[in-house]
Length: 635
Image 1: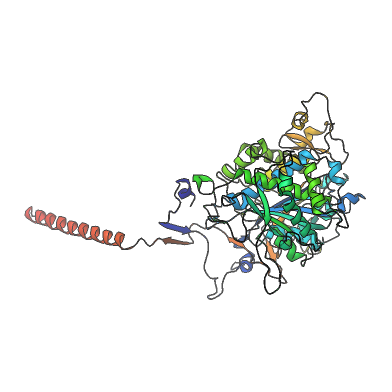
Image 2: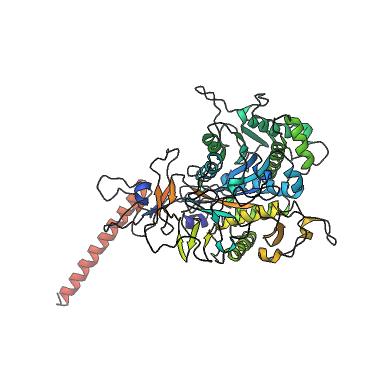
């Protein structure tokens, strides 16, 4: 498939080869399922899994002051403010996993959300953001194409609560730094390398984005969800968010003389109708579906989409053709920038809404425009840099630079250099990939031995030394290049809200930032005005405070087995089965199937004719050779 793609062959279908196990189990009629292949035992009775779950890491971050990494940490009410979550997926899929370009289904949404973060981080100071009733957070969920595994696990932990064996306070994620009150806490079982999500306030509403790069040649976005009304008047927060989006697109707000003209792009209410049976409005396939389901409908939100009640013509949804390569997918750069502006302003308006929801949509929209008067543009340097990385070259210099800095930061913090994670590829491919210690699975290292999780209660082997017996004990995580780069960009974009004025610059924020290779180079930085915003290195610049966090993206029914090496998983027998469980069998060069295209009658007739002619020629040649040998008396 990759060879065909590199040769610009759009529909090359001579032969397809699948090198994955796709047959029944070893007991006749028994079918090999995800559960049975994860629990597979060989003839000796030894546990020997034949597949791995799909997964990776979601990335989330907060705008404003950094959130504490210690559960229940400082008496900081700022941590517990209601959360307005800007969310999207960062993966895609196709028939050929190695070619999942996801230009419109993944890349456009990632770019829009990152630009929204850049717009907020560069325009609004932290003290203003901290003064809102709500907190703005960003979430980039992995594995959404496979049962929404990223959003479901994150939201389940945040909305329904997370219980850590041994106490919710967890342990220091780097044992040698246990005396440092700022050290992030982690949980040994079920393993979570970062418990900062416990300090997020309740999620008040979600603002999601989906397929905002292809509007079908039009300039209209559509607002899905929010009770799907223009002025519903039901007092719901999601209804308020929908009204704000529409208010921001009104002619008065788009052209008020303050650079608010978004190039003619606007948002309008979707025409999707409620179901006749339950009067519920269907939602597009986004993380919002996870939030509504896990909250029992108590919490909702809105989705900004590039389509109305159906995907636009030639959307190439989840196709290997969803790529800007060879002009297969038409991406509107200005539409992505306009979507970023709408998302950022809606988030600010949502955070500005008070506890009693006493602010009307028009007032909130006007306030958001006041704080964010200048829209994002497709000609800006951040846009052009990210567009190149997300759509054209996933191994671009910018991604490598940001990921290298985060690699150095982790190596300095943990004492272990894991190297760079899985590359995104050139051109990019947004397939989620498998989940193990080399591809996103967080691990705990105790006395030099790696574990997928640790439990003293389940320890039956005397040689297991629990976490905390050695100064080198730590939690490790090797995220993919895409995940690590998003992590760094969020820190860079959102870490500028407390930078104080300095003498000598040219007035721009970039002119004031010190350069760095890792966070240890930022110790002497003095321009971070808030004590809570300890300088950190992101993308080669010292910014104020780390705001980014990882969270595992894994099917909620699957958990790493305690006290065993990473790569061993157990399946919860009480799983509700909300979505299918996705695993990938181990690749094999001698197991699989090869499928050929039905080429019709002509090739067969031609092959038969040529074969008959060749056969006749061979008979004649043999006959003549025999006569010659007889004549020479050697036969």
